[in-house]
Amino acid sequence: MRRPINRQPVLKPQDFYLLLALAAIRGKSLTYPDLAALTGLSMSEVHGALKRVEQARLLAFVDRQPRIVTPSFKEFLLHGARYAFPAARGSMVGGVPTAYAAAPLNRQIAPSADPPPVWPHAEGSARGIALIPLYPSAPAAALRNAALYENLALFDALRMGNARERALAAQLTQRHRLKPVLP
Image (cartoon, rainbow, N blue to C red; front, side, top):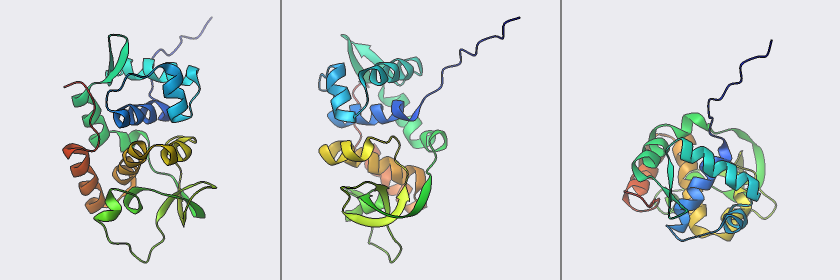
C-alpha cells in the first residue's frame, strides 16, 4: 500500500531570501534570469521560490511580474520569520558584517567590545562571530547590491539581536527600508 504524500507547502530559506531581494529592488521589473543573477540562485530555484511564496500569500503576480503583498510580508518578517529561520552562530571567522554591525544599524548602535556578527566570506572586511547567512549566496549578493545588504542585515538583527536591536530594526523596517510593492 502506498503512503500518502504530504502536500503541505513549506517555505525554504531561499524563498524568504528572494522576498528580501525583491523588496530591495523596489518594484522594478526583472526576469527570472535577472533575479537569479541578483541573488545567486539558479533559475529553477527562483521559479520554485516564487511559487512557494505565492502559495504562502506573501507574493502575487501582477501583469506576470512578482509583487510582494505588503501586509503579509511585514507581518511574517516582524513576527514569524525569526522563528522559521532561526539564527545559527559559529566561531570566530573573517567575513561580512551583518545585523547591528552593518548599515543602517551600525550608525545607530555604538560598537561594543564583543566581536560583531559576520557572514563567513573570503571577501569580508571584518573578523567576528559567524552568523550563518539565510542562504549561502547571500553574502556575495549583498556585496554587489547595497539595498539587498541592508535588507539582509536588518533581517539578521530581527532574528538574532537583543530587544533594542530588534526594536530598531523593526522601526527601520516599518519606516522606510523594506518597502514592498502591493498595499
